[in-house]
Amino acid sequence: MRAVVLIPARYASSRYPGKPLVPLLGKPMVLWVAELSAKAVGKDNVYVATEDSKIADVVTAAGYNAVMTTDGCLTGTDRLAEAALQVTADIYINVQGDEPIINPEDIRKAIAIKKQDMASIVNGFCWISAAENPESVNIPKVITREDNTLVYMSRKALPGFKDDKCAPKRYKKQVCIYAFTAEELAAFKAFGRKSELEFSEDIEILRFLELGKTIRMYETQPGSLAVDVPDDVAPVEAALRGLHRI
Image 1: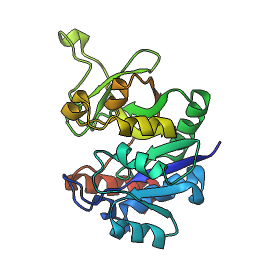
Image 2: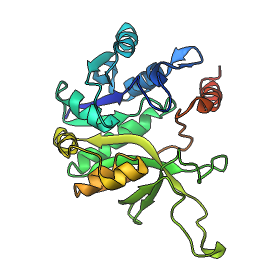
Image 3: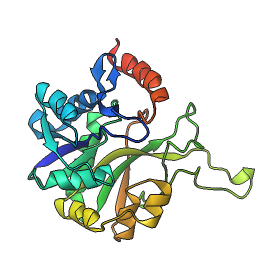
């Protein structure tokens, strides 16, 4: 089976325009993600899906594959669905272009789980750290059954609780590594719009629940950090310095 990583990288981000090219310790963020992905699947199996030639030029100059998509994609997964029409593979791994400290082992883990259960979507989660605020709307919280099958995701701090003695000790958060087949991506795109829950929460994987798909969540390494807004750059750079001893 061929597994490839597709990295959605949209220049015209509403919250942070040009985000994929934001320099982190002097290197565009999308290249940090591409390099980590290459450690998992090899450089030839890493593709950046983008609507913007500036991103494509940076990616190809660094020796990675760029796939041009339209600028009307509703979500990153819709962008992947377009890119998958141009890249032949059995398994498509979505690694978000704004999570530059993803562990390559977690990408390999997603591939292994998908190979064992090709009928299910695969998505990562980790535990929210003490330094993070579970009330933050920038952190999608993950609700699962005890077997880690997804029940729901929300930007609210879930699960809720009736009184303090029932309060959860820890919360799960989404880590944006997903595993799909071409057929699953095509079905997602064919839905044609954001589902009501997806639109309300602004969490695209909820569309797969509307499609009746089982979503298997798996635990990744802790410490996942995303760049959603400019204020996120400094803590991500600090984490990169620590990881690479810069």
